[in-house]
Length: 126
Picture (cartoon, helix red, strand yellow):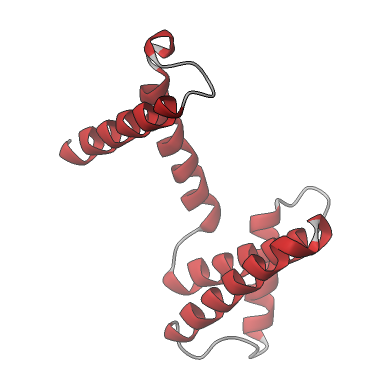
């Protein structure tokens, strides 16, 4: 991976190169089990410290890019879309912050989650 290559693009390139040489999953359905395995390994790594967590999270992200490739989706575009969606919804959550209970008050997260769900419903109804 070159210094200027973004990690998601680098993962995609590496996987394409491996696939071109025959080192690839035969069926997309096989990737779901591997994704679940990587999630389990990340969960187990939580008690082992930051270096192990980073390693396992990297494996999970690499597998997610692999799944995206098999599904015909650009992982970078998918993540950019998720970022934009989060930003839109969070802007709704943050509207009139002064009306929310103070940070630390358990009602704050409840009200923020309600606003989040309102934003989701509004997006889906459009």
